Image (cartoon, rainbow, N blue to C red; front, side):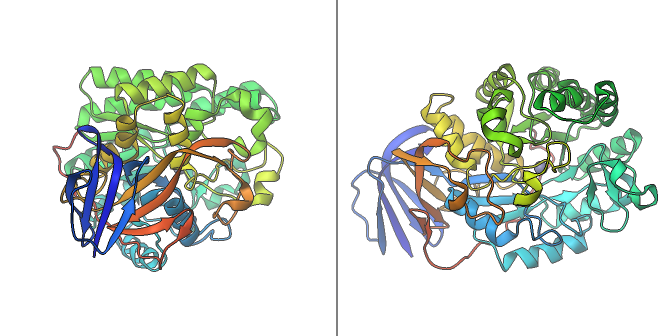
Length: 468
Ligand SMILES: [Zn+2]
């Protein structure tokens, strides 16, 4: 199968190029001058369009299995593909979680049956309880291991316990103490892997909630109960652990200027700490709460304009190397509950690329930097490069074609997610993906899938020298 993509503005590591792409047997064969004559089975005319490497969304919670009334892998990957994402990296905290190589293999087999995009899998780090599984998980191709730092787990299901008060103490596995976390850093380093964590210090959160003195009733209460100091503190501890062990450490969903400052400080000291942020932190602020409403409740919380500005600087200066959606659906009913009792997390894998493209077209970053944080650097970080994440000969022909002139309003009722409630409902976005190409075949055209689902598992190959 030969696909000839013609006349596009190609976003390549060397910058923007006006040209053609020849894709054959799923990979990019050539980056050609516009108008080059080639034999092809199919042509896609990309005149006036931007052609990015297919987006990689490294932060997706598909709730499958275990909580598939909230979302499942078929819906999350179909939504992702529609939004221009060709690879998702699935988080490990379904039920049961991916805390062993045995569950990893089951999950891989399960998701191979329902994937619309290619996918990689995260492993879950529990501390000493599964330290012996870290090596086998990386050997099986895990993209990274995730530590929900400070979160307790349900003893039987190993599901995350968001509020300790919700469960009788005998049902709860307390989070590993920091001594065990240090062992974990050493073990991940030994295997040349990548450790990532939710960074909000549990003691800072507990004290802040106590100081608030009453349940969370307003958006300001939420910010007071989850201060930026909680994020910065955990990143500071992680920096020391990364320095002591040589472990590569990645902050997921960085949300604060204070947290970014610690990442900058770590990098100045030559410590391998990098960060991800998400469209919600890059495009919303506390001032949007009136418009967006309780569906905006995510952990860590969306903060002030100054935080958003700092995150854009961090992204453009290279401290934030990757963006992810943190697609974390709950039911429509749960998200409509009162602010205090509704679970944190928002639907986002379908809007991931489109919201960032809108920001690009509003001048927040450059096309090449956007391609880096949504594809190239993400692929490098998670051991998928150069197979994924880049427009160059030999790489998988995963592409997204963007029409910069299009305007599209996000509508809950048009979302593919099983529980369609988006923080961006009613937002008009500039630019829109008009085609998603997965391994050399058009997989979505104008939001409609073309052909059947054919996502595949991709194994990460980590080596110890791939520091961020
Ligand atoms: Zn998450």
